[in-house]
Length: 224
Image 1 (cartoon, rainbow, N blue to C red):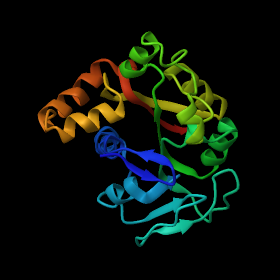
Image 2 (cartoon, rainbow, N blue to C red):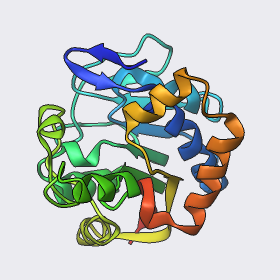
Image 3 (cartoon, helix red, strand yellow):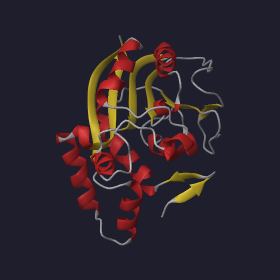
């Protein structure tokens, strides 16, 4: 079920997680416009179009095939003409070498709230992989992640530290989806019809109780 795109894995599990992320973010969305930072393949963009009419996307590689404002640039060099009521950054910050500098630039475009989500170093599946000897330690950047362009693997503490260094104020944090299996294991189980929507929703609800064991962690921020 995993598709190969330019040699990089894109799992159906990842797409499904976007639905759960939006479910977590929606109560905090503000009326107005939205900037999506790092809109790779526009999987999240399509879902955000159900909530916002005025959407701007920036990405250094992939141009959207939908009617949104688009700038082919990275946030490190972007020169945008306006500020935004909502800025969404999904699984992007770990790809940026100078993360604090990038967050400071984002803060300059922020009029409302910033939504950041990153893969979680302490996800249950990753901790299991450490005990299996497949990963050196939870915050390791493994070879597949390096190929995918990751510079770091965040925990709640290290992500919050970058956010505070950038002068942003945290108003809410949480985890998305309790995760005991690797992505490909979820995809294989779904293909075998082992998983149900009820089970997946149960993992999402359990993640609210155990955010540090979730697939992704997120912070919702405002200007400090």
